[in-house]
Length: 161
Length: 213
Image (cartoon, rainbow over all chains, first blue to last red; front, side, top):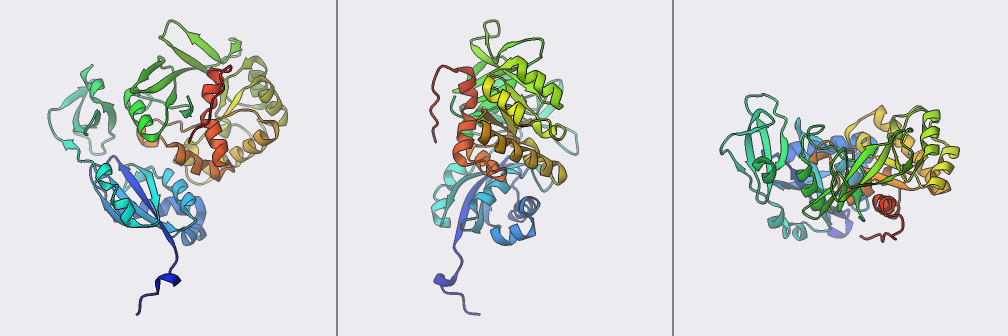
Protein backbone atom coordinates (compact mmCIF):
# COMPACT_ATOMS: atom_id res chain seq x y z
CA UNK A 1 0.00 0.00 0.00
CA UNK A 2 1.33 3.40 -0.94
CA UNK A 3 1.85 5.74 2.00
CA UNK A 4 -0.57 8.62 2.16
CA UNK A 5 0.93 11.94 0.95
CA UNK A 6 1.83 14.32 3.79
CA UNK A 7 -0.87 16.85 2.86
CA UNK A 8 -3.56 14.19 3.35
CA UNK A 9 -2.27 12.94 6.68
CA UNK A 10 -3.79 14.10 9.92
CA UNK A 11 -1.77 16.65 11.86
CA UNK A 12 -0.42 15.32 15.10
CA UNK A 13 1.04 16.64 18.28
CA UNK A 14 3.71 14.97 20.39
CA UNK A 15 3.92 15.32 24.16
CA UNK A 16 7.14 14.62 26.01
CA UNK A 17 6.24 12.97 29.30
CA UNK A 18 8.41 12.39 32.34
CA UNK A 19 7.69 9.04 34.00
CA UNK A 20 8.04 9.14 37.79
CA UNK A 21 9.52 7.19 39.41
CA UNK A 22 11.83 6.29 36.48
CA UNK A 23 12.94 3.07 38.14
CA UNK A 24 12.19 0.27 37.23
CA UNK A 25 11.87 1.26 33.55
CA UNK A 26 8.31 0.92 32.23
CA UNK A 27 7.79 -0.49 28.74
CA UNK A 28 6.03 1.65 26.11
CA UNK A 29 3.29 -0.96 25.86
CA UNK A 30 2.28 -0.64 29.53
CA UNK A 31 2.49 3.15 29.41
CA UNK A 32 0.16 3.05 26.40
CA UNK A 33 -2.31 0.85 28.32
CA UNK A 34 -2.34 3.32 31.22
CA UNK A 35 -2.83 6.32 28.91
CA UNK A 36 -5.56 4.59 26.90
CA UNK A 37 -7.38 3.58 30.09
CA UNK A 38 -7.17 7.15 31.39
CA UNK A 39 -8.51 8.66 28.15
CA UNK A 40 -11.28 6.06 27.95
CA UNK A 41 -12.43 6.53 31.53
CA UNK A 42 -12.41 10.32 31.19
CA UNK A 43 -13.78 10.84 27.64
CA UNK A 44 -15.19 7.45 26.63
CA UNK A 45 -14.56 5.44 23.48
CA UNK A 46 -15.50 8.36 21.25
CA UNK A 47 -12.87 10.41 23.07
CA UNK A 48 -10.18 7.80 22.41
CA UNK A 49 -11.13 7.78 18.73
CA UNK A 50 -10.83 11.58 18.68
CA UNK A 51 -7.55 11.84 20.61
CA UNK A 52 -5.94 8.67 19.15
CA UNK A 53 -3.28 8.39 21.85
CA UNK A 54 -0.15 6.39 21.09
CA UNK A 55 3.21 5.99 22.78
CA UNK A 56 5.78 6.24 20.02
CA UNK A 57 9.03 6.23 22.00
CA UNK A 58 10.20 5.72 25.52
CA UNK A 59 13.25 5.31 27.71
CA UNK A 60 14.37 5.49 31.32
CA UNK A 61 12.11 8.12 32.86
CA UNK A 62 10.51 9.47 29.69
CA UNK A 63 8.02 8.71 26.93
CA UNK A 64 6.69 10.52 23.88
CA UNK A 65 2.91 10.33 23.55
CA UNK A 66 1.21 11.21 20.28
CA UNK A 67 -2.28 12.65 19.75
CA UNK A 68 -4.27 14.39 17.03
CA UNK A 69 -3.73 18.15 16.82
CA UNK A 70 -6.22 20.20 18.87
CA UNK A 71 -6.77 17.34 21.33
CA UNK A 72 -3.61 18.08 23.35
CA UNK A 73 -5.56 19.57 26.24
CA UNK A 74 -7.72 16.45 26.50
CA UNK A 75 -4.60 14.30 26.45
CA UNK A 76 -3.00 16.44 29.19
CA UNK A 77 -6.12 16.11 31.36
CA UNK A 78 -6.07 12.34 30.86
CA UNK A 79 -2.33 12.12 31.60
CA UNK A 80 -2.96 13.99 34.85
CA UNK A 81 -5.34 11.24 35.93
CA UNK A 82 -2.83 8.41 35.46
CA UNK A 83 -1.84 7.14 38.88
CA UNK A 84 -0.79 3.59 38.05
CA UNK A 85 1.25 2.01 35.26
CA UNK A 86 1.24 -1.78 35.20
CA UNK A 87 0.02 -1.95 38.83
CA UNK A 88 2.91 0.23 40.02
CA UNK A 89 2.17 3.74 41.27
CA UNK A 90 3.56 6.27 38.80
CA UNK A 91 2.95 9.76 37.50
CA UNK A 92 3.16 10.81 33.85
CA UNK A 93 4.14 14.48 33.83
CA UNK A 94 3.81 16.32 30.53
CA UNK A 95 6.83 18.54 29.97
CA UNK A 96 6.55 19.88 26.44
CA UNK A 97 4.20 19.64 23.48
CA UNK A 98 5.53 19.90 19.95
CA UNK A 99 4.55 19.30 16.34
CA UNK A 100 7.66 17.21 15.68
CA UNK A 101 9.33 14.37 17.51
CA UNK A 102 12.73 15.80 16.62
CA UNK A 103 12.12 18.92 18.73
CA UNK A 104 11.29 16.75 21.75
CA UNK A 105 14.30 14.48 21.25
CA UNK A 106 16.54 17.52 21.69
CA UNK A 107 15.20 17.84 25.25
CA UNK A 108 15.76 14.23 26.20
CA UNK A 109 19.22 14.62 27.74
CA UNK A 110 17.67 16.93 30.35
CA UNK A 111 14.91 14.44 31.17
CA UNK A 112 16.75 11.13 31.26
CA UNK A 113 17.64 10.14 34.79
CA UNK A 114 19.81 7.25 35.89
CA UNK A 115 19.12 6.42 39.51
CA UNK A 116 21.66 4.63 41.66
CA UNK A 117 20.07 1.51 43.12
CA UNK A 118 21.42 -0.65 45.89
CA UNK A 119 23.81 0.62 48.51
CA UNK A 120 23.47 0.38 52.23
CA UNK A 121 20.12 -0.42 53.77
CA UNK A 122 18.37 2.49 55.41
CA UNK A 123 16.26 2.49 58.56
CA UNK A 124 13.50 5.05 58.51
CA UNK A 125 10.56 5.21 60.89
CA UNK A 126 11.72 1.93 62.49
CA UNK A 127 11.55 0.01 59.19
CA UNK A 128 14.30 -1.20 56.87
CA UNK A 129 14.41 0.04 53.28
CA UNK A 130 16.51 -0.28 50.13
CA UNK A 131 17.34 3.18 48.82
CA UNK A 132 17.22 4.39 45.21
CA UNK A 133 19.14 7.66 44.91
CA UNK A 134 18.77 10.22 42.14
CA UNK A 135 21.16 12.96 41.06
CA UNK A 136 20.48 15.89 43.36
CA UNK A 137 18.73 15.31 46.63
CA UNK A 138 15.97 12.81 45.95
CA UNK A 139 15.90 9.39 47.54
CA UNK A 140 13.17 6.76 47.13
CA UNK A 141 12.93 4.02 49.72
CA UNK A 142 11.53 0.56 49.02
CA UNK A 143 10.68 -1.54 52.04
CA UNK A 144 12.66 -4.74 52.28
CA UNK A 145 11.05 -8.13 52.32
CA UNK A 146 7.61 -7.15 51.06
CA UNK A 147 6.03 -8.45 47.90
CA UNK A 148 4.06 -5.33 47.03
CA UNK A 149 6.44 -2.53 47.84
CA UNK A 150 4.99 0.88 48.58
CA UNK A 151 7.85 3.35 48.24
CA UNK A 152 8.58 6.34 50.45
CA UNK A 153 9.79 9.56 48.84
CA UNK A 154 12.43 11.50 50.78
CA UNK A 155 15.40 13.78 50.37
CA UNK A 156 19.00 13.12 51.41
CA UNK A 157 18.50 15.65 54.21
CA UNK A 158 15.59 13.61 55.61
CA UNK A 159 17.83 10.55 55.82
CA UNK A 160 20.56 12.44 57.62
CA UNK A 161 18.20 13.45 60.44
CA UNK B 1 2.80 33.31 46.32
CA UNK B 2 1.58 33.24 42.76
CA UNK B 3 1.16 29.53 42.40
CA UNK B 4 0.01 27.54 45.41
CA UNK B 5 -1.30 24.02 45.78
CA UNK B 6 -3.89 24.66 48.49
CA UNK B 7 -3.62 21.29 50.27
CA UNK B 8 -1.12 18.44 50.34
CA UNK B 9 -0.56 15.79 53.02
CA UNK B 10 3.05 14.78 53.69
CA UNK B 11 4.45 11.83 55.68
CA UNK B 12 3.08 10.26 57.92
CA UNK B 13 -0.38 10.93 56.36
CA UNK B 14 1.18 10.35 52.97
CA UNK B 15 4.32 8.68 51.67
CA UNK B 16 6.46 11.75 50.92
CA UNK B 17 8.29 14.00 53.33
CA UNK B 18 7.61 17.70 53.43
CA UNK B 19 11.05 18.46 51.92
CA UNK B 20 10.48 16.06 49.02
CA UNK B 21 7.08 17.68 48.44
CA UNK B 22 8.77 21.09 48.36
CA UNK B 23 11.39 19.85 45.84
CA UNK B 24 8.69 18.38 43.63
CA UNK B 25 6.60 21.56 43.92
CA UNK B 26 9.58 23.59 42.70
CA UNK B 27 10.10 21.23 39.74
CA UNK B 28 6.43 21.49 38.85
CA UNK B 29 6.45 25.28 38.89
CA UNK B 30 4.66 25.89 42.19
CA UNK B 31 6.09 28.44 44.61
CA UNK B 32 4.17 27.37 47.72
CA UNK B 33 2.13 24.54 49.18
CA UNK B 34 -0.38 24.48 52.01
CA UNK B 35 0.20 21.66 54.49
CA UNK B 36 -2.31 21.08 57.31
CA UNK B 37 -0.57 20.88 60.66
CA UNK B 38 2.88 21.79 59.32
CA UNK B 39 5.28 24.31 60.78
CA UNK B 40 5.46 27.22 58.33
CA UNK B 41 8.88 27.27 56.69
CA UNK B 42 10.68 27.69 53.42
CA UNK B 43 12.66 24.95 51.65
CA UNK B 44 14.68 25.48 48.44
CA UNK B 45 12.63 28.55 47.62
CA UNK B 46 9.26 26.91 48.15
CA UNK B 47 7.07 28.39 50.86
CA UNK B 48 5.36 25.84 53.08
CA UNK B 49 2.22 27.42 54.50
CA UNK B 50 0.81 25.74 57.57
CA UNK B 51 -2.92 25.21 57.88
CA UNK B 52 -5.33 24.68 60.72
CA UNK B 53 -8.81 23.31 60.43
CA UNK B 54 -11.22 26.04 61.44
CA UNK B 55 -13.79 25.48 64.16
CA UNK B 56 -16.82 27.64 64.69
CA UNK B 57 -15.66 28.30 68.25
CA UNK B 58 -12.50 30.05 66.96
CA UNK B 59 -13.84 33.08 65.14
CA UNK B 60 -11.51 35.48 63.41
CA UNK B 61 -9.56 35.97 60.26
CA UNK B 62 -8.33 33.16 58.03
CA UNK B 63 -4.83 34.55 58.34
CA UNK B 64 -3.33 33.41 61.60
CA UNK B 65 0.02 35.05 62.37
CA UNK B 66 2.04 32.37 64.02
CA UNK B 67 4.89 33.54 66.18
CA UNK B 68 5.43 30.30 68.08
CA UNK B 69 5.71 27.94 65.11
CA UNK B 70 8.26 29.96 63.13
CA UNK B 71 8.27 32.90 60.80
CA UNK B 72 5.44 31.98 58.52
CA UNK B 73 1.72 32.06 58.01
CA UNK B 74 -1.01 29.63 58.78
CA UNK B 75 -4.13 29.41 56.67
CA UNK B 76 -7.51 28.47 58.09
CA UNK B 77 -9.27 25.61 56.32
CA UNK B 78 -12.80 24.45 56.98
CA UNK B 79 -14.28 21.08 56.09
CA UNK B 80 -17.58 21.45 54.27
CA UNK B 81 -20.52 19.36 55.37
CA UNK B 82 -24.30 19.68 55.28
CA UNK B 83 -26.03 22.91 54.34
CA UNK B 84 -26.62 24.16 57.91
CA UNK B 85 -23.05 23.42 58.95
CA UNK B 86 -21.68 25.20 55.88
CA UNK B 87 -23.87 28.21 56.57
CA UNK B 88 -22.69 28.38 60.19
CA UNK B 89 -19.05 28.08 59.08
CA UNK B 90 -19.40 30.75 56.44
CA UNK B 91 -21.20 33.16 58.78
CA UNK B 92 -18.55 32.88 61.47
CA UNK B 93 -15.32 32.89 59.45
CA UNK B 94 -13.37 35.37 57.38
CA UNK B 95 -10.80 34.80 54.68
CA UNK B 96 -10.66 31.06 55.15
CA UNK B 97 -10.89 28.21 52.65
CA UNK B 98 -13.90 25.88 52.51
CA UNK B 99 -12.76 22.41 51.44
CA UNK B 100 -14.31 19.11 50.50
CA UNK B 101 -17.48 20.30 48.75
CA UNK B 102 -17.30 17.33 46.38
CA UNK B 103 -18.11 14.97 49.26
CA UNK B 104 -21.08 16.91 50.66
CA UNK B 105 -24.76 16.07 50.20
CA UNK B 106 -26.72 17.53 47.31
CA UNK B 107 -27.62 21.26 47.59
CA UNK B 108 -25.16 21.82 50.43
CA UNK B 109 -23.73 24.90 48.72
CA UNK B 110 -26.12 27.23 46.98
CA UNK B 111 -26.54 30.83 45.86
CA UNK B 112 -27.16 32.07 49.43
CA UNK B 113 -23.93 30.55 50.73
CA UNK B 114 -22.14 31.78 47.61
CA UNK B 115 -23.21 35.32 48.42
CA UNK B 116 -21.99 34.99 52.03
CA UNK B 117 -18.67 33.56 50.81
CA UNK B 118 -18.24 36.46 48.40
CA UNK B 119 -19.08 39.03 51.10
CA UNK B 120 -16.69 37.53 53.64
CA UNK B 121 -13.91 36.73 51.18
CA UNK B 122 -14.10 33.01 51.92
CA UNK B 123 -12.55 30.85 49.23
CA UNK B 124 -13.98 27.57 48.02
CA UNK B 125 -11.40 24.90 47.25
CA UNK B 126 -11.50 22.81 44.11
CA UNK B 127 -9.79 19.63 45.25
CA UNK B 128 -8.69 17.68 42.18
CA UNK B 129 -7.94 14.48 44.11
CA UNK B 130 -11.25 12.75 43.25
CA UNK B 131 -10.76 13.72 39.59
CA UNK B 132 -7.21 12.33 39.62
CA UNK B 133 -7.68 9.23 41.76
CA UNK B 134 -11.28 8.13 41.38
CA UNK B 135 -12.97 6.45 38.46
CA UNK B 136 -16.65 6.09 37.59
CA UNK B 137 -19.47 7.57 39.64
CA UNK B 138 -17.41 9.19 42.46
CA UNK B 139 -15.49 11.14 39.83
CA UNK B 140 -18.66 11.96 37.91
CA UNK B 141 -20.26 13.31 41.10
CA UNK B 142 -17.18 15.42 41.87
CA UNK B 143 -17.07 16.85 38.34
CA UNK B 144 -20.78 17.65 38.54
CA UNK B 145 -20.43 19.37 41.91
CA UNK B 146 -17.41 21.40 40.85
CA UNK B 147 -19.11 22.50 37.64
CA UNK B 148 -21.93 23.82 39.83
CA UNK B 149 -19.43 25.63 42.09
CA UNK B 150 -17.83 27.24 39.01
CA UNK B 151 -21.25 28.45 37.83
CA UNK B 152 -21.88 30.04 41.24
CA UNK B 153 -18.33 31.47 41.29
CA UNK B 154 -18.94 33.23 37.97
CA UNK B 155 -22.18 34.72 39.28
CA UNK B 156 -21.14 35.73 42.81
CA UNK B 157 -17.37 36.09 42.39
CA UNK B 158 -16.24 34.39 45.59
CA UNK B 159 -12.56 33.37 45.56
CA UNK B 160 -11.52 29.91 44.41
CA UNK B 161 -8.45 27.91 45.34
CA UNK B 162 -7.21 24.76 43.65
CA UNK B 163 -5.49 21.84 45.32
CA UNK B 164 -4.45 18.29 44.52
CA UNK B 165 -5.00 16.86 48.02
CA UNK B 166 -1.87 14.85 47.25
CA UNK B 167 -0.66 12.24 49.71
CA UNK B 168 2.36 11.48 47.55
CA UNK B 169 4.64 13.43 45.24
CA UNK B 170 3.23 11.21 42.48
CA UNK B 171 -0.19 12.81 43.03
CA UNK B 172 1.02 16.40 42.82
CA UNK B 173 0.25 18.21 39.57
CA UNK B 174 1.77 21.20 37.78
CA UNK B 175 -0.20 24.40 37.08
CA UNK B 176 -0.45 23.30 33.44
CA UNK B 177 -1.98 19.96 34.43
CA UNK B 178 -4.34 21.68 36.87
CA UNK B 179 -5.46 23.99 34.06
CA UNK B 180 -6.15 20.93 31.91
CA UNK B 181 -8.12 19.33 34.76
CA UNK B 182 -9.92 22.62 35.36
CA UNK B 183 -11.15 22.57 31.77
CA UNK B 184 -13.11 19.43 32.63
CA UNK B 185 -15.26 21.43 35.04
CA UNK B 186 -15.45 24.54 32.89
CA UNK B 187 -12.60 26.57 34.39
CA UNK B 188 -10.77 28.76 31.89
CA UNK B 189 -6.95 28.76 31.99
CA UNK B 190 -6.95 32.34 33.34
CA UNK B 191 -9.40 31.40 36.10
CA UNK B 192 -7.18 28.48 37.15
CA UNK B 193 -4.19 30.81 37.32
CA UNK B 194 -6.16 33.22 39.48
CA UNK B 195 -7.25 30.34 41.71
CA UNK B 196 -3.61 29.28 42.11
CA UNK B 197 -2.81 32.80 43.34
CA UNK B 198 -5.74 33.01 45.78
CA UNK B 199 -3.88 31.65 48.82
CA UNK B 200 -1.40 34.53 48.53
CA UNK B 201 -4.30 36.94 48.30
CA UNK B 202 -5.94 35.45 51.42
CA UNK B 203 -2.73 35.59 53.44
CA UNK B 204 -1.75 39.08 52.29
CA UNK B 205 -5.07 40.76 51.57
CA UNK B 206 -3.57 44.24 51.35
CA UNK B 207 -1.04 43.29 48.70
CA UNK B 208 -2.05 42.99 45.07
CA UNK B 209 -1.07 39.58 43.74
CA UNK B 210 0.02 39.62 40.14
CA UNK B 211 -0.87 36.60 38.06
CA UNK B 212 2.10 35.21 36.17
CA UNK B 213 2.54 32.48 33.58
